[in-house]
Length: 148
Ligand code: FES
Image (tube, rainbow, N blue to C red; front, side):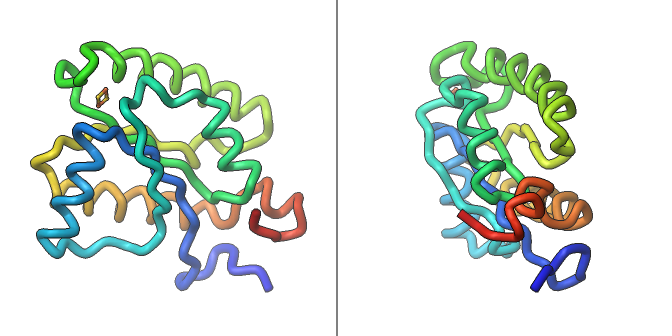
């Protein structure tokens, strides 16, 4: 049964969060009892600069409806420039997604610091709304709706 484009469709979003900022922001959102949709599956990474675009493609191919990458704000990367490398990489990745027949709006890149629990909850809510509006992943449809 397809849930595409229904109001109660909860997309599956793989969220790659840098350990030093966004993961801590997610933790703060939890301890601060911030409410956000149960749509994300968190993958904790040392830095957004360590996220190989292949990880994002793999998540989409394996059935994720969207991917969110969140790192430290510009200038705050624990490893100085990892988030700048990530930003450049994801600009190119979005173009590649278009060529591969995947809507590039399924991938979102954002900054959330360790002190921004409320912002983390808002970002997850916004990304979930945007991915929900797109419906189920094109790859999932091609695979007959199965989830990996
Ligand atoms: S350590 Fe957070 S983006 Fe590099």
